[in-house]
Image (cartoon, rainbow, N blue to C red):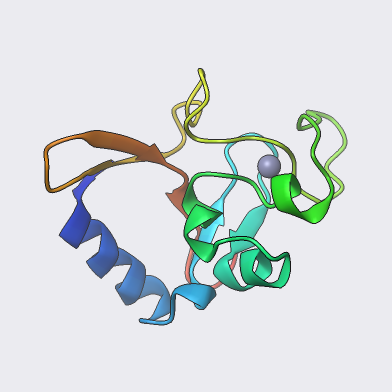
Length: 110
Ligand SMILES: [Zn+2]
């Protein structure tokens, strides 16, 4: 799914409200749903929540395991060579640049 930046923000607000700390994104590698609040709690910038897995900030900096999902996150980032593994969204910035981001989680959290 491709969004303009304004449409993407509108979609996030529709799902989670205006408080970005309540926004949720799905890590394409480990499947964990990361929230802005978790990034803040980990001392990270909440705006990283759509481009990095919480594992990078919570001390669980390691590759996602395909078979064992412990829910602690992994080291995946959307700006890496493999992007979002075809599971993310594209946001078109005002300058026309396209940025790959993690997909929104469902508003209910799963
Ligand atoms: Zn992950």
